[in-house]
Structure formats: structure tokens, C-alpha cells
Length: 132
Ligand SMILES: CC(C)(COP(=O)(O)OP(=O)(O)OC[C@H]1O[C@@H](n2cnc3c(N)ncnc32)[C@H](O)[C@@H]1OP(=O)(O)O)[C@@H](O)C(=O)NCCC(=O)NCCS
Image 1 (tube, rainbow, N blue to C red):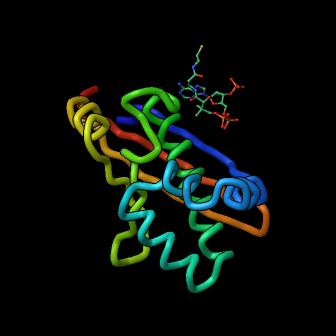
Image 2: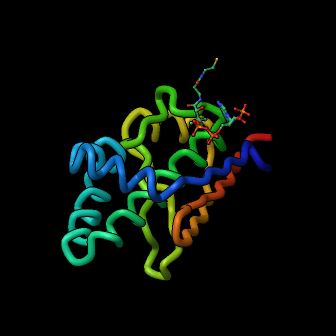
């Protein structure tokens, strides 16, 4: 049964501006360790790909925070919510620490979808529960 849904749209230009202002510190605040490594590799090859990667992660995490009904309030934090990729290319939510504990205690599972176009990144998240 559906526990919650969440959506978010992110202006890629704002992400670009924040990166220009704060550099790696901004990416470090938003990304998990694994995401940060991916971001650094992508940015090194092509900075614009790094910006788009960060924008889709930003919107996916906000969409997830809405689907679980918390918003960006503990135990929901940027870095404890990771958006990884399955071998097929499909994104998947991987949680860490207290957020993982909170999520598993409620027997929840998440589905995430992301997209981006020139100036916007958007995400949609569905969270299911096994406990009606
Ligand atoms: C959810 C949140 C991450 C979105 O922030 P944002 O990017 O600035 O705003 P967005 O336009 O993407 O989303 C806003 C919408 O998120 C939704 N939203 C807000 N809190 C939410 C929550 N806890 N769970 C699910 N959805 C929520 C609302 O529909 C809101 O629309 P509204 O302003 O018309 O009511 C942020 O508002 C948040 O962390 N909220 C919870 C913490 C908080 O502020 N609490 C104060 C309560 S008094």
C-alpha cells in the first residue's frame, strides 16, 4: 500500500550558482560519500554533467523527503539519503544511519524517478509500506 508520494522540481541554474559560490562545500553538503565521488569524476570530465548530476540528486532527495512525510527534518538529511543506480541504469534510493533505521522500522520501500532538461531537474518518489 502507498505510504506517501513526493515530487520536486529544481532549477539547474540555482545549483550552478551555488556551486560557483560555494564550490565543493555545496556538493559535500548535498551528496553522500559515494555520490560525492561520482560527482567529482563526472565534474572532472565535463563540469556541466557534474552540475546536472547534483541537480537531479537534489530534486530526488527533496521528493523522497516529501514521500516519507518529513521534509528535510531529522532523521531525513541530505547525506543519509543516497540516489544510486542499478546496473540497468534505473535510480534507486539507498539509505544510511538513523534514516535507514527509521525507514526500516516502518517496513517502507521507495521508488524514485528523475529527469532533467536544459534548466530544470525533476523527480517523483513513491514510498510503499507493507503494514496497512
Ligand atoms: C518539504 C521541503 C523539503 C520542501 O521545500 P522547498 O523546496 O522549499 O519547497 P517546494 O516548493 O519544493 O515544496 C513545498 C511543498 O512541499 C510540501 N511539504 C511541506 N512539508 C512537507 C512534508 N513534511 N511532507 C511532505 N510534503 C511537504 C507542501 O505541499 C509544500 O507546498 P506549500 O508550500 O504550498 O504548502 C521543506 O519545506 C521542508 O523541509 N519542510 C519540512 C520542515 C518545515 O519546514 N517544517 C515547518 C513546519 S511548521
